[in-house]
Structures are given as structure tokens and as C-alpha cells.
Length: 582
Image 1 (tube, rainbow, N blue to C red):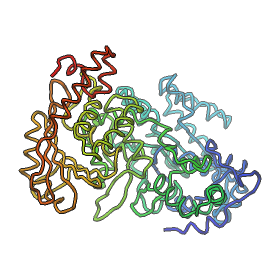
Image 2 (cartoon, rainbow, N blue to C red):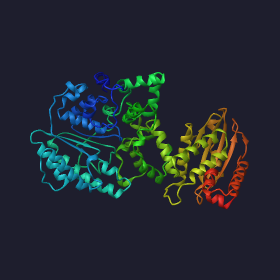
Image 3 (tube, rainbow, N blue to C red):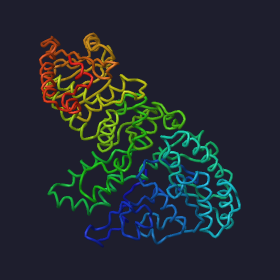
Image 4 (tube, rainbow, N blue to C red):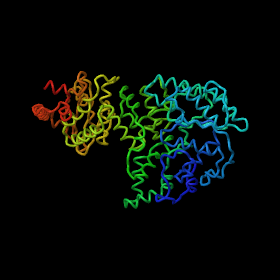
């Protein structure tokens, strides 16, 4: 792996403004960053290595991860703009030659107003006009091939395609349009193979990596470098790069807070580091880092730039267990799987990786271990899932998860159950769910994971797997779910002895069986047992007194003629339960 110290040592550091040098999140081109004295983290040693090894490349990275900056850097390199690179590693390493460049950025293709084929055809005409060329072809593919051939008369052409998949990604909730656009793009890109002899260098970037069968089937010469170790840190910031290029802002933070920079590094790493494409080199999210140093506030910057509504809707429909994403093992075929027409549990997991919600944490014996990159992604994604699964706004779910945490800390099982019922109460009756028990399980798991960190799911024991285990200072909760009887859930905990690994830990062990009622689509009943350290039963069902207190409160609310919506919110009971009484 290359040493970034050489590149870092030549970084431009100026004191033009009070911040030392500029943080400009909106400057996506290399030229703008250099001319306007913005921070540019020098990645040209990686670029040199890529140019030297490959001439036809594909690279997938999440949104806001520097793909457009990378494309524009290549554009300036192949334009012969040597002086822009005078502080970069590559400055004296290459022969500076100007090549004709076709730069196709799908942010500038008006496929939402026009049909994609028409929009591409119009874009080809626009690119040709830049070179004073008049195209005669009728289709976008024909015009693309014609433009390449005309421009290559003197020198071979450089083709740079940014956000190649945007016309597909933007329509993932409208699969017929997405599939139509996929087929148009497949035909459009196929000309690149036919015109290969005219092309000096080809780089295609995007968020998703669709199946080669569906998009790049004709481009078998295209080298996918997405998970190549030598390019793992080509996008994103390494720890070393953070410490060097942002040294001014780090020093400012120390002055403002009176704390040592190591404290800052640990927190930055927790929030924004953790992305990897080889399980060895881990990088920071560049957008979040630039945003943080602009405000000195720890917030979910990257997550806020795009809502994963489509992903959440698919997760809701499939009923996939969300806990699997804490540590998920896959083989290399996983990275080739995603196809628009067959979105299922495996495909949605692949798309979660490609879009940046999962990353590679380690690789061992050809097995890739995936998980959330960092705190920003984990907490924001889980919160978004909870809001989506429960069909409640964030301020309501925040209040409920806070009450869940307090209820379990104080061993108030009935309060815990009522808060879970409040979460489930807003799920639409007509929602299409393939596995309703898994759906409820995932929602409760997410609520618990947001409330506290010591939550595990599907814990393997000698006789089976427990659904959820929550370990707190004074209590350990072993929770099992069943569609139907809570007693059968509790019996399973006891029969399988899911509690046995936790005996002798000086904590009270609570066995909790929860039964879901199909007709009410909520918790029907629940049963709890409390065990001593040796496993002996010390306390029987603890629900009746609390239930009676709850109903007395409801009766008083009804007597006071409070709106039914308010009673549902504060009691955690469904409207049907309240109207039917006990």
C-alpha cells in the first residue's frame, strides 16, 4: 500500500482567511478547490497508480464521498492543467498532455423532464457543440459513438462518466421506469466496447453496482476496482490525512474547548470513521468531516443529505431481521448480486452496502464481515427505521424510547409493554408484510437498540437462539416473541434454558414472553418470571397490579372526556382495547 505521507507533505496550506484555509462543501470540482484556496486532500498518488495500471475502470462509492471530485481531478489531469497540481504528489511524475475529454455527468442530464433516450441524445449534442462538432446520428448510442470517433482523430479520447446509475436510482420506487432506464443505459454504454480502440482512459462512477448481466454485459473489459485494496483509501479521508490537512481546525478546536486533540480524534473516529472496502484501510466520511469542522458540532451530516425511504420500505415489506446488520457475513458473490427486478433480503443487503449504510469490517478466509460504519450511520439509520416501522414521527418515538429505557432500568415490565404497544399501535392495518412476527421483532429490537447499547438479538445457546437479550446494571432480560401465546414464548425460554449463560452474574434475570395477537396486530398478552442468580424462581407473574393501575388511569381519562387519541398516546393501549374495556 502506498504511503500517504509523501502526498500530505506537499499539501497547500494558506492563511488567507481567519480559518486558515477554506472549508467549502459545495465545491465539487478540483479546479474550484484549488483556485479558491479550499482544502484538497491530495489523492494523486492513488490516481497515478490507477492511470498506470488500468485504462477501463468502474468504481462504486456512496453518495457525498468524493466521486465527482475524483472525476474532475482526472479531467484536469488529462486536460494538461499542470499548474493546478503544483502542490500535489503527481506534479512531476507524469508527462502533461492534453487529450479530448468527454465528461458525462448525469446530474446534468434532464431525464426527469424528457424521456431518458431523448435526454441522452440532447446531452450528446451539447457535448459535441463544445467541440464545434455537429452530430448526424439519430440515437443517443449512435451519437455517443460518433462523437468518440470524431474527437479521436488526433489523440485518443478520455471518457469520464459520473453518477452513471442516477436515472435508475432515482426511480427505485417505480420499478417499471427503473427497468426501462436500465435497458436504455445498457444499450447506450455498449458503444464503449465497440469504440474501445479510440479511448485512452475510461472511468465510470456511481453509487450502486448493478448486476453485470443487466447493465455492463457488453463491457467485459471494464475493471471493477470497488473493493481493490490498493484503492481502498482513494476516496474518503484517512486518520493521517485528517491530522495533517485539518491541523488548523484541530488546533482551533483545542483552543475553543481547552481539551487535548486526542479526545477529538476518538470522538471523530466514533462518529465518522469506519468505512472500508478491504477490511484493513478505514476512512472518514469526507462530507461529515468538512461539515463538522465548519460547525464544531457532532451531528448526522451525511445521513441528513438523503433519506433511505426506499430501503426502509423494502425492509418493512420483507420483514428482514434488522439485527443481522450488526455483523453480517457474506462471500464475494454478495457484491455482484444486486438487480432491480429481484429485490429481496439478499439484494436489499447488497444495496445497503453500496449506498453506505453497511461497510466491510474485516475479511478472513474469503468471508467478508459487514456492519454499520460508525455511530452516525448506525444511530440515524436505526432511528429512521423506527420511525418508518412504527409509522410515528421522530418526536414521538424519541419519547417512547426514553420511557422504554427507564422502564427496563426500574424493572417496570408493564410500562415497558405499554410503550411497545404504543409503538405498534400506529402500524397501518393494510400494510403488506411478508413476515409479521419478524416485523414486530425488528421494530422492538430497533427501539431497544436506540434506547440502550447492551442489546443483542438471536443469541446462540446450547439448545437454541433467544430472540433478544438486554443486559443492564441490575437486570438481564431474556425476551422471546410468538404469534399467539405469551405462555408458549415463556415456556420456550425456560425449556431451552436461554438464561443459563447469565446465571451467577449478580444480576436479576427476567424471563419475558410476549405474544402478538393477529387480529389486533399488537401485543395480545405477556408473561414474566424473575430468576435468582442460581436460576431459582423468586418472583411470579408481576403484571396484574400494574394492569389495574393502568385501567384506573384510562377510566379517569374517559370520565374527563379526553380525546381518544390522547388516551391512546398516554396509555399505550389501542383504540379498540379502550373501547372494548377489559
